Image 1: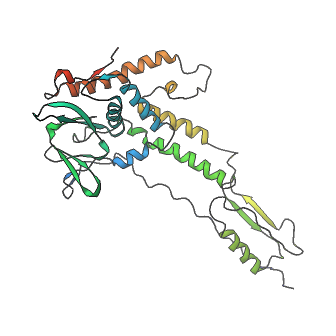
Image 2: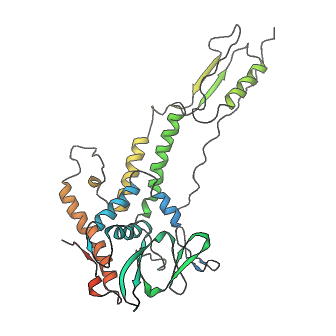
Image 3: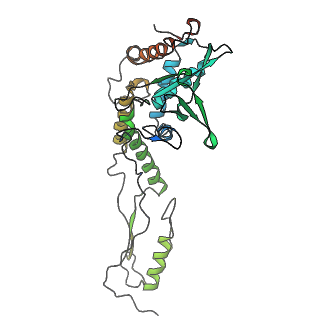
Length: 329
């Protein structure tokens, strides 16, 4: 029979590595553009891949891009040989990336017969002002400046590429996503935030302690600590305890974080909450949706329609028969 462990020394060990946070810096930290001489084009001020990925970070940001796109493209009547879905693609790029482009399709006489949208995700500017469309295997398609109608949202720091208007809400969109991921991990972890495995039974031998350490440290992954059988002959019923480090139910800012960050995203897009599916938290509600829609259409949708039409119709290569038309009433 082994002697009881009478050691008075504190025995403590950790298990379960902390989750590393995403090392994102503020997305608009740039002073000037970099010209990639190897690829022979100006690098974009913000990663286009990053902007595309961020659109799927939470339930609001990406949905607002689609909603704004549909409101503008829904007023498109026709022109330039464009289908409705092609206008959707152009408007989507303009909102999501801050710039968009149409390629002029010419006939054998050099006259423009229709327009075709170019994907902003892969469109780059050359130092001459011409355009490069990136393709697989490091290939590029070259387009002359006068063959492209290019519309960009204004950026005071550079006028080569556009900048989307919602950048101030990106961090809130990421926070909203992180709050959801934290809650998911919490439930996957057995609805606890961690625990202290506390053992004071004098009958617990050193070899048994080592076995417990090994068992607990090996229980990583989804669910983390599950169930463990311990048999200590003549042991104390209170000699082994599992003490939760924290209980999310006692003080949970999840709802508050989600609501505030969602409001920030709506503000960044200048989008009315009533049209974004937000449930009002007070009896007054969100006002008359018809009036809200009319104001939003007048202040946001129609100006963008007019901007697109003006950019295309004022191009000297676009004849009157190819002019874009939008419903502006």
